[in-house]
Length: 453
Image 1 (cartoon, one colour):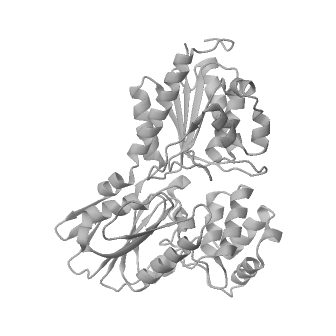
Image 2 (image 1 turned 45 degrees about the vertical axis):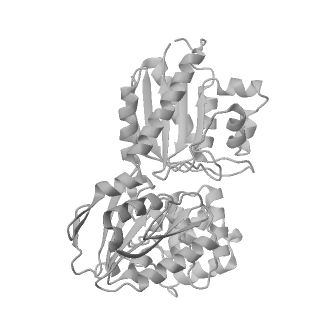
Image 3 (image 1 turned 60 degrees about the vertical axis):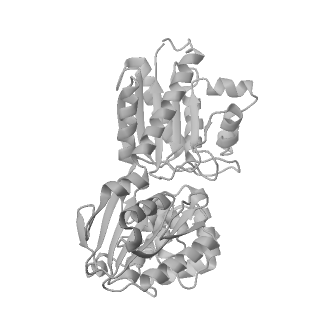
């Protein structure tokens, strides 16, 4: 197809349907209920958790705690496996992500900004694991969103302090590694402190990863994992983004006291050695990408997975993906059409405007400008949790006709980009993907389809 010709509406409709089907295949592969069942099984008194086997014969009580958008489904699986062997439990999930549970209490709380419900859940969780004894088993369930959903400020800090800091970090374009390093140093439960409180009980943590590279100390800010960062690292992060003057004074004082050695760092590897914690990743972005690839091949596309570790500024990463799509049409490299190019990870957005949107919608909007007027290229950029930023959309579709259609609708794509207002742009075009809460969370999937008529 030449660049000055356009695909038929039928072709674009088929590509759009294919993209959504490919996305949903990725979701099915990381369903938390199925993922926990794959990782755990009970054989009489032996509980197998990944490569570990725990004999439940000497165990007095099984306590289940956790936090994250996907932990309701994870808890449901644990209940199906252990049933009334569970003595007590409590998990914190995002509003709208709850499921009926029989043995584990569930609290809904705020995300991405923590709220009072999350604070109550964190206090109750810490109390529950602190009461654990040597002959108890503590099972911890973690998924994306766990940091915001388990917000227990360190002594001397308030929930409002943490809300202000979270808001600043989300808006400045800091990545999840930087955000969670700070969260750990402002918390009474993160950075290994939850495991420290549970000791000497046996502790096993099941994790659905939403972090590039599956770093255990970053996922949900690593409440059961030794910390590798320092108070000074946090100070450096705020200096890097020129945020020092915007921080609450209590936070400034807390970090300075920590850097001076006047406050304890989160537990490090040496302090965890006496009470090891078993960690098992039950699902991640790579599993979703592999399932998406399989679905795309079944639909007749040649496939290329770029990476499950995509990060960086959303609009810059989007233009790179668009360039690869254009190269497929121009030279048949790196693969020939019909092509499906897949990637996953988590980009960031530096917020300069006051519009609505999320990183996936911004990704799609930036990509639309880079594929405008080309042949048949369609992208779907969406979060696997079903909520992109503070919106009800998972993400958005963009194709080579998006910019032209927006002009006909009286929209200015560059103004919407400048104001970080991708949501209203795609909403007006009918190009948002709305799934509702998916029950899982393994970061984002980017699906690029390239066809020739």
